[in-house]
Image (cartoon, rainbow, N blue to C red; front, side):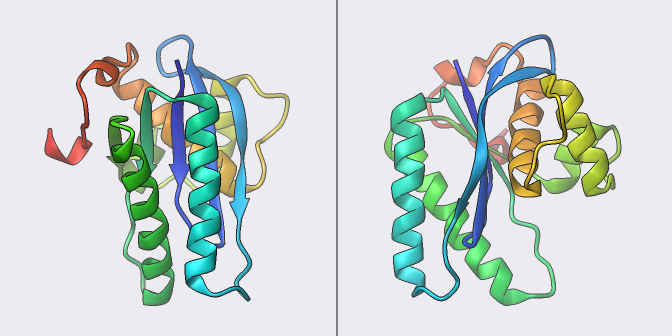
Length: 172
């Protein structure tokens, strides 16, 4: 059983497939970043990202997809591209009837690092510890995706969501 954690982005979309271990901990089975070129047209980049997400879903067949909820910042262009990437992931999971949970950045940081305002290095260090990795996972987008998956495991250590159909944490 795997949780697919996603840190959505169009240029860099972090992903982590985590298998449950002890409460709030896990084992990383795949960790990385899907990259698209900013020089390519947006529809092509979305198609490339979609193909990679489909490949991850098909290969690992996660029981739940956990996604970092979009944080609205001052750069509207960044927000739009992150929203496009996030929507694509949510739709692909829903099309496969895989439960989806979204968590806010502060909720993820609070669960993983014990502080909703933790910085990137604190989160990366805790991801390293909780996954038993030899070094801090890089790039940061991959570590963030692992933190999203670990956040879900802390909320649902028995993966109860796997049998409930489509679920969005916002609906609870």
